Length: 201
Image (cartoon, rainbow, N blue to C red; front, side, top):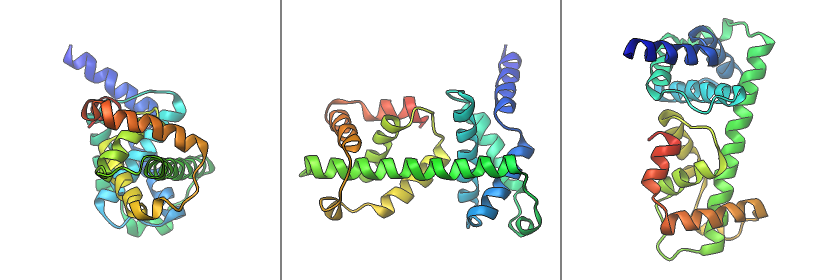
């Protein structure tokens, strides 16, 4: 049974993206948006490419161990020095542009929801920003993210957010509505359980 399951998992992974396709996409991403500066960043970007592709294909989730294994393999082959000489086809370029746009949109949604929550509820005891971001993710994104990209996402959003600045910023009604859901979660919800279910932590 384990062998059959493993074959199914591999098949699902290959249906989303192959090792070579991911490596090519990673090179194209680095060419287009700047080379990653650490192995962790390489792996986070590779993980985001996988997630975006599965999102595009309508595959709700993949086995985290399979994704991690693929990402590690590709990261070990990634050579920053070779980026300048790599040639990118249009399909790969379109893919990585989509990945970047999705990343920026998600980042924006998280930041807006954090800001809306700070404005609307002005919590006396400010919750931990990282945990709050974790709680927001499943409210704004229905595909399961992987740990590598979540860590990177939290770092990026946290670095842009300050409680004291949030009160002066303008946010839309959508963010305010999500902030209401967030407040309920933070007050009554099982954050750890939710995060584990939707985010795979």
